[in-house]
Length: 141
Image 1 (spheres, rainbow, N blue to C red):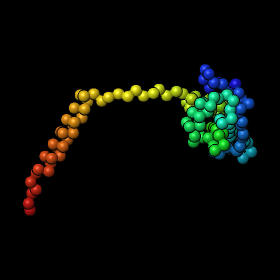
Image 2: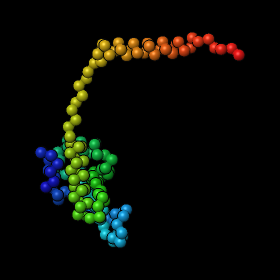
Image 3: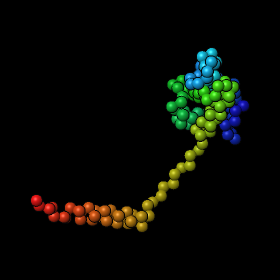
């Protein structure tokens, strides 16, 4: 079980891993070892998430989710496939935590009377400064 937060845990059976050739350095191993790991998670059909949670994840991670509702996380930081798998799982858990985090509702506030007056006074001063510039008499040749 992969723990996302106190309420949500996702079974590892829901996660699908594929390995492929990684780009970048690797010496002699670069063309024969599949060290890049891609984690696939079917958000749309997951039994671990409620419909509200699925909707939230689909909206907040829309750029990482394909049209079929599958989330993709890629890791190719290390030369080890096992380490990349662990990194992909950590990254997945972090993405899910952030996507499912409740954002507090903004409380509407009013601009104070003093702040309004200061803003208007600043505008008057700026306008006065600009008007003084245009009152100068042009120098004739």
